[in-house]
Image (cartoon, rainbow over all chains, first blue to last red; front, side, top):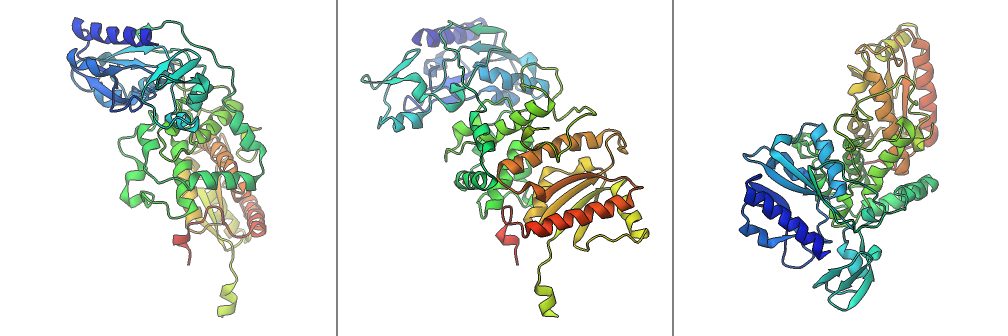
Length: 321
Length: 146
């Protein structure tokens, strides 16, 4: 894995030194090995803090909305899942493509820090990454799949954007079904589903992190920020409030959600928010044909197109005609 | 008098498109066809104008059922509006069902301006369904209750 980080870093250096780009959007070291955060690097000197490791889960494509409007070209590193978000933003004309130099980077699946704790590791000071195993703090050896983010366990995304790709072919394909949990929920009774979601959504503290991180959720003016909308309350008072927020949040990105899983990654309460988005994806697949948002930059989204033979809402529950 | 008012009648909100269903409701009225008085009609320019948030907010404000009426697919005054409505509402209703909220509380019906009788039948039938379901508990907002 160190080899990959070096390759990415040298790419960043090369781009900055040659003057091809004036800035690089990547990930920077934090205080601990796991608190890696997105960062814009302006000089080669600043790149000493650049990292690319298993904790670089953050999707950088959303930052391009603002960064690509500034002067000069910016290089950005995109993991396979990020390239879909990038394409989707290009499709929606949210990114000035001529100011962006996109570089695809290989990914072996990113880590979920909570899963390290669940495995009994009290503090993660260092992680040595291997393809199938990770060595934590120089002693505990864990299976890489056991500490991966949920979204990475079912990922089979490929690079669909990027002028160059840094790849060492060190990744394992996945054969899991991403709709497994959605199907399980659909098979429950309405009461069980209600209880499940009440338990999950009542944890919500309305921090709006899921909204802020989502590359598809990028309106400059958000309905949830409008004080006259009566839905801008930041605290949950009733079950209505939390259901309403999450239904609308997921609905606003339906048909545009690339299933990058950032919403669930950033949720401080660990609510499985991607299950709401995946429900929409699974319904769209069943009702209107398989569709992967962000696979290209030209196709029409399922909610901005129609056919005369579409299913009626009364027949369409569960995505079944 | 108080005794009569105590019995709670379910509240039904009907979003009707200006060009077909609202005129259909008008025709039902002028044809002396009855529909329940607890159906409150909200006129919208097109069924496509109805945002999922409208439907959820109707529930928040005490509605027990929400019905959306528009022109028949293909007859939209704006040519294609109701085709988009159909896709959106299919997804929204499926999502409500996924969250365990009774799916019978929401409905989409296509009612043209000439279908006064259909309007009355649809409303009577929907009101019957909502009566059987009773009060909306799963999408209620206690702050909005008396």
